[in-house]
Image 1 (cartoon, rainbow, N blue to C red):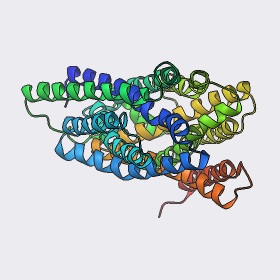
Image 2 (image 1 turned 120 degrees about the vertical axis):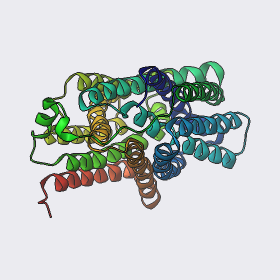
Image 3 (image 1 turned 45 degrees about the vertical axis):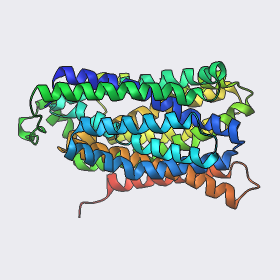
Length: 398
């Protein structure tokens, strides 16, 4: 069990993490295009490599927190990112920046699973819904503000700003994590919460689980399928934003403002879903959000005007909000090992971060004469994900 004071500190760590990681991991693609003249294929290839590291490191990060302590794992992650990104501010070679990206990505994977686990640890189902709602609002708002302002940093301070500003925040997060560790040690040993007694859960939660004949564990698996596929879409779209901005004649500042619409839309979805629990254990909401996500993705990457781009982003963000919230809520509601489940939740995101750009790169390689081949291929894969979602929902128990 963690005290309210420590959990408040975790929310601060989470918000700072959303800002710092967004500045670096999203705007690195603008830096690569400007510094090394990267094309779409190379940007996507680097994004796929980051996703591959994320898939493995997130699971390891969650396990490390579960076994060694959440705050120790957090401190290790913040320290790793601080050293790697600060070094990147001074390095010039393309392969050294590749190493910086992967090392910083591995460090990040020791942060998110353990932030999630600390927020969820010791909460009953009712307070879990409230805490996860705040958690989602904090990180998504930080993500939105950082993307909104990232282009301004590039225009005002130059390309190296995406290294210096995040590195300073990472150092601050490391110091705060160490302070929280000291506070926790002073309060005495912290033990994981005992396994949840389902019979003791509030009647409202028991009623939620009876909304569908599908067992809660199946909802968790469906959400674990939908969430990585949503990140297939995200991590295909983000590396292409610099080229989309060029097509629509947007400056880095304008691109940051316009192309942050989907993130603000996702934050709005989190706010709505936090206050309304009618979507819990109802398949139709998850299925509708998945189809809306596919439509929004196609609309973003094929947009021919700023108005079309904004409209597609609104749909995309709302859909992503429900999909992500489902994965996190069911992961924490169904399981007792919060660190392990947080790692699996983030690891599934990593699988999507890898698969999306990898598929797009392969399509561009084999069909170089078709500029939209990668987008169409990713769209087809997203529809395969919808079929898998339905198979989990409607299959008969063994």
